[in-house]
Image (tube, rainbow, N blue to C red; front, side, top):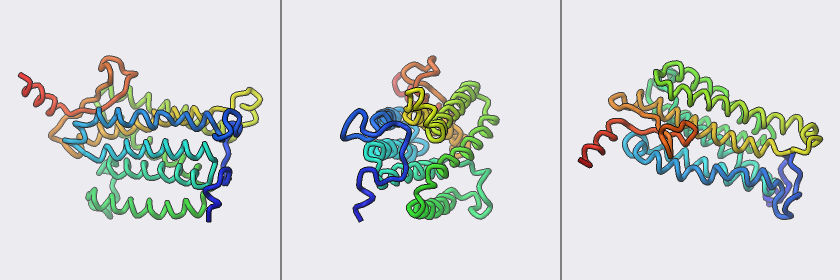
Length: 269
């Protein structure tokens, strides 16, 4: 029963050589490239504190789950254990589910849920629980299945971007999609063309996947948080901003609400 906890018990192994840097860490670069998953979510929690207070406190669930994804992924790549693999893959599944339940537009709801987000969430949780059980039974196919989840998510994002009138939001969506494509390219090359990259002495594309997919994932969450305000809180206006400078669009994007900005300004006079 302890076999899944043993180092090297996972059938998955990436292109980076094992124990080349440290005798205690199997894939050194793949382990520490998860650093963004741990460092950025606390910043995002702070930036989204007003959004969480006045629009949807569930947004912080996304940031917490992203931290768990990073920790689980680091554990997996450090040990290459089957338990680490399952924790890594299942936390990705659940963070996707959380965003799906929270932000999926009502106009695309199946008729069975009757425009009821609570019923939609319960139905999605049931499907995710079933998928979790299947993932444990057949862990070998998890990675490819999880990769496919990004396709419908970015499909919906494209539909929402076509509806927006904000050029700033549209530009962020374009950057998000481009970074996602770069991330997927890194993952595929590391998985399928490892010999080529080994010959170039650069077996670190999976580490770059971690960096790019985090940026794409949290940016997508920011965009969907923006889109959902119009549908869930139509009397409010979402504003896309950047930290630390709002005029620097390569900073950290976040969403705030116009009505509460005006209230705050009024209170300070």
